[in-house]
Image (tube, rainbow, N blue to C red; front, side, top):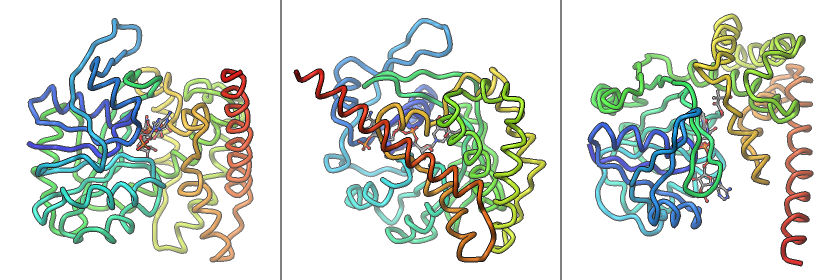
Length: 317
Ligand SMILES: NC(=O)C1=CN([C@@H]2O[C@H](COP(=O)(O)OP(=O)(O)OC[C@H]3O[C@@H](n4cnc5c(N)ncnc54)[C@H](OP(=O)(O)O)[C@@H]3O)[C@@H](O)[C@H]2O)C=CC1
Ligand SMILES: CC(C)(CO)C(=O)C(=O)O
């Protein structure tokens, strides 16, 4: 299948390599010039756990440069960048193109609906992980899975089959909205707490009160979900959290929000805990934990951005 991955960052790169290895024709689309240049010149370096680095040659272009027709575009930008990416790649989206969004957070489907017909959209969630450690180099660990559903009449079966050829462990769900809230519950625990506690997923699991904190956050999300007609199953989320702590799954992974903070970038917090706190305010549901976590992550974003800017100034001197 001819596949483009829009948002060829940490996770886009990992999935891109797996899809290319399975025989698909893959093109990466990304806006970070240094990353594009590194991959196109020297290949993408992938370091899996303690294994020797491997190089893969997947062509990467900017959103404004990309040309050609793709049967499938996998959207893997950070949530705040999705709208901009879709605007920039509009020339390559035909009526036959299917778009699958796997980014974390709430509200992605509504953004895509502004750009293409419902029948072209598939939405999903993924437990694959990856870290972009420097331009052109990702570090990977463990394994993962994907759940997806067609929003209208897109061809979920052929998309799932193409992804499964690459061993991506895809399951078609009939209730992707619940899956998205479920995943957002997982992210609303692991992502901000990794930032605030400076811990990877396994290290978070060693905190004596870690799971109590998780329960407080999830209890609020469950109450907010009920106001929106979404059933959030806390037991199922806690089971998934416990599985993710294992090194063979994602224990050694620093969540994507942790990586954003390290890179001095704004995070997806407003599409996770911040989203639940906002709906909670509208629906008169108290969400003190989610509101506090959101405020603390925003504070951390500011602190790290100032620190990084100072470091860069020092380099210039
Ligand atoms: N990483 C993971 O393990 C997982 C991620 N996800 C989700 O997948 C989506 C994509 O995440 P992920 O791949 O981690 O995101 P990345 O930050 O690695 O990549 C997203 C985009 O950010 C830009 N970018 C990345 N690093 C830098 C940098 N240092 N300086 C400038 N620009 C940079 C890139 O281009 P551009 O300049 O165009 O912005 C890239 O397209 C998110 O919604 C995330 O929550 C879901 C599961 C696991
Ligand atoms: C792997 C996981 C679930 C960790 O929180 C994730 O989605 C991320 O890193 O953003």
